Image (tube, rainbow, N blue to C red; front, side, top):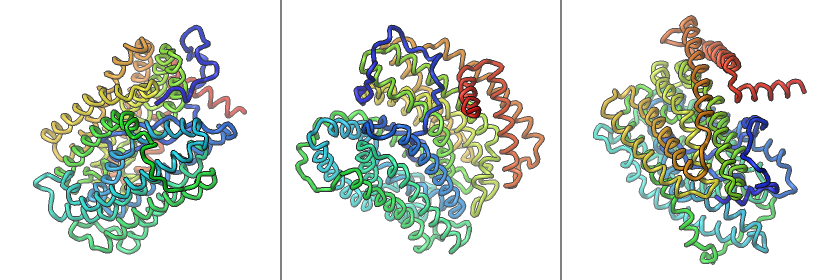
Length: 588
């Protein structure tokens, strides 16, 4: 990524490092969606937001993005709840595997390269070319559509081979493999529409249009929610074995999921004409500078490949060990979605606020400012995410029962999956901090460094996956994999901090450690109070849905109130800043 996109007019005119004591809270920033991938193996960092034309209102665009992100996340989670209730455990696990394939192949072809290479390149050509990048964009889209079409056909043909990658265990039944393959043949064409949507969204963003890319995913979610509802209406919430899935059930679920992505892609096309872009086939691919694109994208491709390997290993182990206890691929994926929601709402907004400053500082050689921003970002993310992590850990069972004890999912399956959510609570802060460091590398155009740091992190992750598989009971495997993710994220953050320190100098370890210690003390107090309150509430180990909701409301309020009270007592500056901001806005 090029820091030049964010070079500020007064960059470099300060005599000292950036002083964050007078800055507004970082989380007072509109939420911009991150590039989420499926289920925890690897997250492909997105690019910085492209620079909008001067005529557009930054505040208006931010409002559109924030509203679209929140509604999209809300409908996306409702979609997950409906499908989980409709499909149950075994069928849901097969669906989770089939849904994984299009995302994996997309990430190989475009995911990381689009965000780190193509999007900044589109911005530069938009500014530099006499035709505003029209010809270049048309050629790029022509090539991409052809590649996506060919890749889609090949992956559909290779569906049985893809299934084997995730189901090599001897105890995986042929019926289970067959169901994954049948669903995959219907859902793999999502690859084409996902890639097309991403490319069109990039074109729209570089031309200052943000509404359609933010809101069309909601169409996708609504269609799949309707599909899940239709499945419940036609077939009921019956727990089935893979061999009991008939062709019409498979066609409804697989075809309906594909339809949602296709409608999302189609919804973007009218917006192209609105921004003045005209589709035209161009085949002068040499003009794209493919060799240069390959060099720029090579390290990001390396980043993606190793993450996808880890993702494949995780799902393979989950499939090999999966029973009907609610701790297979489906619930692992659902819990990972909860982790990504917290990360997306809080940490991504912090990263979004920091990326322009870090990019501009890198362009001007102001490395002390980058160090100050990293320090502040770590402290703010930790202070803001800590109460969420505590809620995930203490209230894991009520959360899973309230969200997923519907239809074909039984209560003991939801409670069993709560251990996975505890693991997600442990992973939340290390993941967000590791992502902050990764984006700092991108701000300094250090794609190579980010990829190399990722190698030992993923190697450790896979080694821990295998150790968990060998040592843990199947009920604990998914939770063990989530904790393994946490350990690998922590390793990534430590290595990144060590490498970055050599280039940008000290990142305020003493101040960061002081904030971490205070946050840990406040979190410990909130955990103790939360556990005591949970002991007093009705339900015990066999929660009803009503009891789970009561536990969530009461327990969440107590944990949040305790954490904030202790944070004020301990004078955690990042928390007091946010509270001051809220009070000021309420007074207005």
